[in-house]
Image 1 (cartoon, one colour):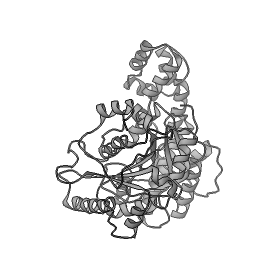
Image 2 (tube, one colour; image 1 turned 90 degrees about the vertical axis):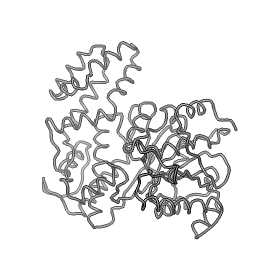
Image 3 (cartoon, helix red, strand yellow; image 1 turned 60 degrees about the horizontal axis):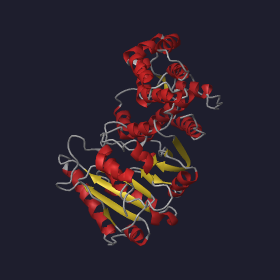
Image 4 (cartoon, helix red, strand yellow; image 1 turned 30 degrees about the horizontal axis):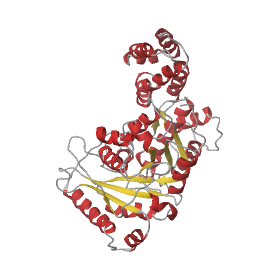
Length: 448
């Protein structure tokens, strides 16, 4: 089957041609799950064990692709673990069952794929080898294996090797994309917070940071009020091609990829199923869950601080002013200064006047102008503003004081008793997190 013209064009211009995919059976698919993995042999068994508990009716149209990767300079223990993973997956691909899980996978209709970016001569390049490139390799190769002859959505599903899933994971993703005609989405997630040790405290601390930021983004009417977690990302192939694919960044590839998507399509949230990422510490990427857990456990800084709610008030007023129609740069700068002098200084430092003048020189169409505003004041620049305001005027405050203010702003009454400025016991921290999770899963609709 020939590939569609837009797919051919994308692959010719943007794909990385070195790597190939090994498959347990030939076929064409509607849903392709891409999983980068480095030193994850034990977790690979867990992730496959979780996926095979999903509804089997989707297996014949679903491919699971592992991108086993490392650098030439990676430690020998990493390479050895990857060798075991390659051996395990190749046995499944070749129909050789070594355990009950392998036998179940071989006898199922679920197709397993493997990209070897680990063996000698196949390693990722030193300069940009990492999770971003590993995802890109898998996602680009996936474009060659979709069944373009039917009308079903062609869904690229990203997750990680340390995740497990609800049993309706595939059902809900496929159903939401096809029935609601989604272009891109993030799936609900929950870390395991059932324990009572320091690692549990660390992951609770990180998760309420994530949810607090997204909820205050929603409050501030941001176009980028969604989680940017790689193990929860999904999009259709058209949107993937439209934004020229995922980047090769060694970290934060999920943030920048979803930000690109949000500038072109609406990022929905699928709340009817859940991904369960690991809450472990990790060396695999320089930021994200693993590093935040490591930082907490190392007691490097006070983790019980969150962005000052006052900074989101400034952001909210700026978003309101930014999307009012004016062809005068001075209007926006004056509005910024009236909102807060430090906002004005930020806009000057970010050369807003120059950027907006360029926008006006390119078009006088209001819709296009507003779209270009979104391109300029994107998720990254929004975060830069919050960090600028944090450093310049409103420093971070006690996390639970901040969350209490968020609840108040959202009109939420919470029966949690705590003295201001204190850090509650673990069980109360869990109650705070459950409220944040519930709020986060409410309607995320906003104009895009």
